Amino acid sequence: MLQKNMGDTIFDKQFKGIKLTWLPWVGNDYSNLPGNCKLLLVGESNYGGWEGDNDDDGLKDTGFTRWIINHDGIDHNSNNGDPEYFHRRIMRNTEMAFYNNSEPTTEQKRKLWLSVGYYNIVQRAMESISERPNDKDYSIGWDTFFKVIEILKPNYCLFCGVEAANYFSAFEKNSFNTDGIHYLAKVSNTYPRIATVISKDKHATKLIFMKHPSKYFLWESWAEFIEQQMGDYTTWLRKN
Image (tube, rainbow, N blue to C red; front, side, top):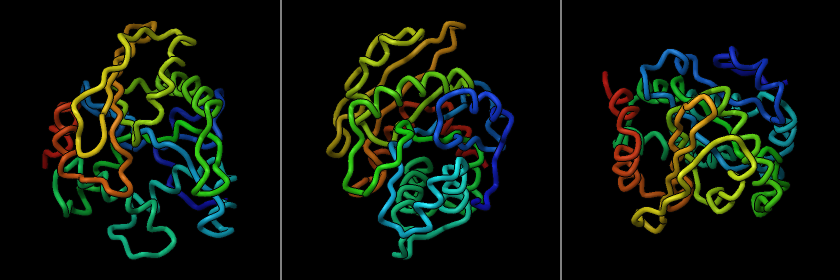
């Protein structure tokens, strides 16, 4: 069993009622955020077979996502080239983009991760870093996604990667309404996408798809994009 800070567990009973391999991380401050500031970060997938047996064992634990956010998001402040570098590079790039700063403070990093929700849309572990999710993975992933946002009711969902947007037809199988997906002007070498989905109880969630914050991620360019797309949240986040 992984040792982890569980975050806010108030939603766990509802999470356990849907098909999730790993329980989402919900920051301790998420439920208390001011109006229009709730943000769910959506990763793509988890990978086994490249960080050693300990990592593969961790993937069997329903708390793996929560452990990653604590271990690589909250507790680590630098990249040092060890086997955990991949996760921490994603965390560091995300932090720099949200703060538009190459060196956000430890306190700022903690504020980010303690305020957001986080989970992966693909809930099947890839066997290696070279494996990619397939059509079925994304179809199942979108079905689960709508159940997750019905529980968390985020104002914004920022997808770390644009590939899931290619499976937007999955919207036809749920009870949410949408005006469809919209392609925006290229940022760096990627066309971001946006969409708005509205639940049966009229709660609107803006979906934002950006380049995956791993390799070749120009955080300065994406910082401006994030601020344009979710200004309510970034204004709150950057306050002292």
